[in-house]
Length: 340
Image (cartoon, rainbow, N blue to C red; front, side):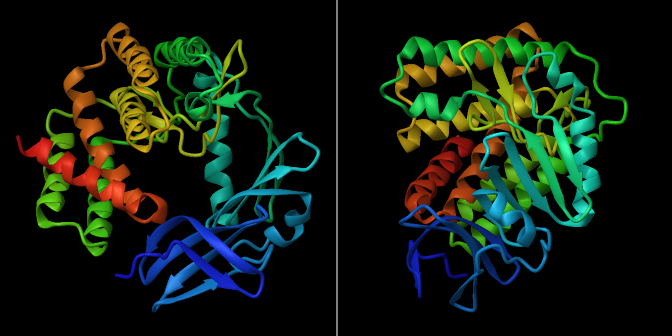
């Protein structure tokens, strides 16, 4: 398949492709203009098509919500996130059929609220808008990448996350939380293997995906803990006193190793991206591993989930032009390590 270019042009000028997601007949795109405007589009049959401001035929509620905030993210046909102009919070514009699942996920997020400040659903629009309250602070990602932030502040933020996550693991799981099994995670990994193959990775790399998927399902533990399912350093905020946790749309019940491994893999990737210094990465890993040890999470399961997440991350970033080359190198290294 054709990978997305680094930028595209239209009558409004040049747009940098920030993110891309493989689809059945090309890629969905998220593009940014030099003036900061963000739009969505798609690459299909070697042609790039950009959507007009506020126009997405699968998200009819976007037209009305568009003027109320600044666009933060936009995946064509799936979801748009707007930051409210008055600073009160965010609006997620989704497909109507997704509303119920998102609101249920937030409703059963009580187990996260003992350890974190979480957004509240302040208004629900049946047309496809979920209004969420603001969570204060800076993300672990932004703190870690900022050379002007003292190392001690970055470490305090990670330690704040650790205290909160220990409470999450100790809290009762919502009775109606949907289970996310190791088999389900393996299926996601194999879908990304197929995307990576279409992007041109070698057979040895694809084989590493197969081995990682098999390792996930061998000796799998029970789905016994509350799970965020997309826990990484951009989902955790720190206001200097308490950690916040956002984007709870996929909250479920899973093995406790899932989120810890996901976070661990992201720390490793941030090192490769140059977003975390060696010292800050070591401190982050110490915080994660401390939680795992105190919660008696099986190290073998963390290793299995981390190997899977590293491969999936590499496949995701293959489709982001700024990171394609580094992601390809990362996948080659992951495959070599898995073959040892």
